Amino acid sequence: MSNPANRIKAMFTGNLRYLTIYACLALLTVVFSQLKSMTMFKGIEVLLICMVGAIIATSKDRESSAITFTTGVFWIYTLSVFSALIELAVFGSAQHKQLVGATPLLATQMESSYPPMVGNGLGFLGALTALFGLYRFDMPQARNRTKAIALIILAAGAVILFLSYTRSVLLFFIVSVLIIAAYEKRTIRIGVILITVISLLAAPGIQDKVIDHLRRGATDEQITSLSSRTQFWDTILKRDPVQLMVGEGFATGTLFQDYQSRGTHKVFTSRNAHNSVLEIIMSSGFIGAAIWLTIIIRIGLQMVKIRRKLRSMKEWGRLHFHHFMMGVFVLSALRSIMNSTFVYVDYFFFV
Image (spheres, rainbow, N blue to C red):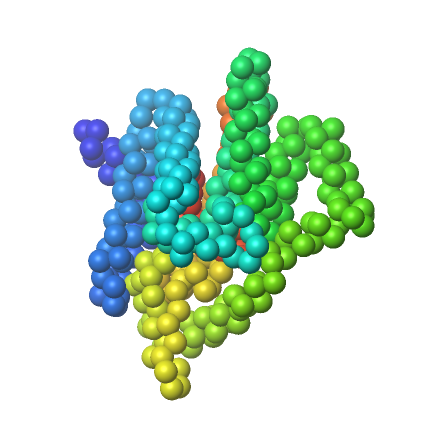
């Protein structure tokens, strides 16, 4: 069988099978979409991920190719975000530099730059960067130079995470680090993290500063995020049965018009959902949500099986990288409960 034929076959096996079906479903929803070009873009984007995954799956050294691809995407994305930050700081208008309450520059909305990102996105990037730095620092037989660079990466990620004022991601980052430490049996690190967190909660002076930091300023009340979420959920779940099954065909980040509201029409964006499953129901219906949940559950179970296999083979270097990927997966899965779909790490888990 020729190589292209092998790659096409790989797109319909394992996790890629479900992702390919998801991509085809996204493309089919163009029929129902009011923003057809955006829906086409999202469907083609996922289909391209499937193609790249198939190329990796049929390569001679699949795991090495996957690690190279994952690392490359991570650095390309990280560099693009930092370049966008520099662009915003140097060329951004006063409107784009407007802060959310009294928060630092990193919590601003970067709607005019690529990738479009708010404080939550920057916090998530900071958490990913910190996890990557931690992974490099703990690499078996790592040189002192590697450890020093890793500490710089870890510190940069932690600073971005803290200054983004992203409360949920900060909590999920701590959980991810604890899980990685537990898998690698680093009891001292677990103890230090727990003691630090408990101390912050127990010390009155520090406690006030932490609470003030996490409140994100007095203007947080003006965001009315909770009301917009509940309105969005209510609107989505009141659609007719066909729309609930196949979705509206909108891509992530595009507008959703509530034609059933009384008086003036209410316009939502998928960000109002703050829940991955509801966003997918909006775009691809319950069919798409079922496929997406199947993918996530399969990946979680497979990661546990792969870890057991690597431990039995005593492949400590590969096991260490796998623990990093498990940490990223846990961070992303937890974040998806309270925020957008895996739009920031679409490429990580399907190779």
